[in-house]
Image: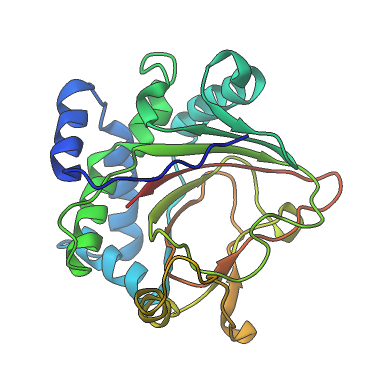
Length: 257
């Protein structure tokens, strides 16, 4: 089972710098994602700033799909983790499939899982997160230092199956490793709900639940083809959906907070 440990405040910006200094990340993946995003959004300046604004306003954004070559390499690493997670000495949870939790991220071998780490720790994502947290007046943030590798099989009652916002607000970076249709149990998000929930969050203490009422007409199931990249503000109302029989959902995601 995953152990939920209390999070203590520490100088996260310094921590981010140490990560970049001590691990040699190849930024080709980040550059590829950024170049494809520039073409799709048709902007030349302040791309990261524009993306952070959309995420804050809408609750999420879909970026162009990851290049097939990089995606294949990440899927190969993901398959190794899913098949041999018990040998890797990292947290995991076996329920409706398996969720492997790398906290901190560098519990994963930086050579064996090079492409997964390069995906999560690229400078393009870092600059998006930096702009996002600056707009929330948070200069101290932890950048993608925890990652989750999910293979979700048939579910009838997903753990997060009711609309909620996260108690610990995060900016999450998702990568779809298979086509995620309705049958594969995509996440649902209520658009433009982040600001409303942020006010609710600051008004409550930790003992009050984080479930919320939503306008279902304003909720979207985030379906997408293999290689889809999603950036999600967890202050938005969101929930998991059932994975149908004979389907599965294969994704990786990392958290900045």
